[in-house]
Length: 280
Image (cartoon, rainbow, N blue to C red):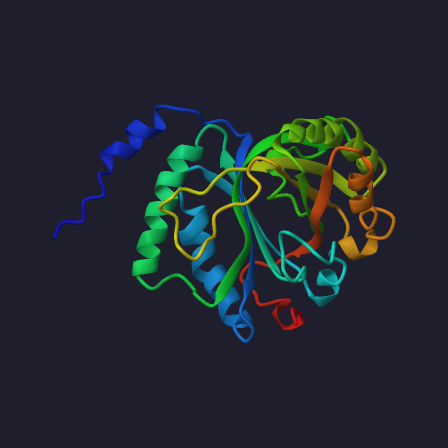
């Protein structure tokens, strides 16, 4: 059988459509390897899936993996979370930037390649997707204005930590108000003088109907916002007074909003098993 990759089509596809550098979309996926499978899961992701299941795909142009060790998991809140049950679930986080305007093109490819990977036995099954969603970029707020790395650099710049914040409103009509409050008030005030260099805000989009069965449909697509805080210091060094009161501030804003998860991470070291023995 001839292996026809239709190579002539690649030049045609590259000649049309958006090809900017802005992170118009993101894949944010928080996963919990099943107990006893931590090492095998990490090796599969590092040695195969990070490339074949993400970075080798069209229009994904940056990616980074993050990990929450036991002590970082213990900082998470609220205890009763609509995102993670228990709130400590999801010790690995992967973040990817997708070129603005290329979401539909990328989704066609990712559904197809994941079906192929699954049929070829290259999908590690002993894991649970705690929070996996493709998301559209809404805003980025910078601590230092025009100075410093931009959001499209964020997954390549050697940031020392990341905080994942997931906020829900009580009704869809209030999400726009929440976004305005975050970008005009909350984020600028908390970034000022802090070890966080930027905060990016995304809103989740539904997964396609032909997604893989082990990934649940996205919740809160009309009410939820996701904030990624990029830190120049280890989150354990700046948690108290910076992020431990963030949930209370959201609740007090009078927008019918609740922080459903505030979770710190540090970057993994690519190609290694560092931190695998510190997850439980």
